[in-house]
Length: 63
View 1 (spheres, rainbow, N blue to C red):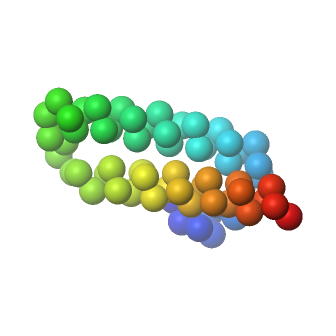
View 2: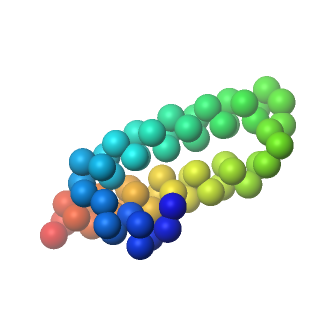
């Protein structure tokens, strides 16, 4: 998810997307622990998407 896509979402949509991505990240991490997943770069991409959304939510709260 790109930053430009994140900026266009509402706060409620960001919260929903954040919880969904955190759940996805936890599932991927557990799957990778048990047996290596096919594309380990998925972990990095999901983790960074979580960070982008969390940063945008924090920025909106401070304004």
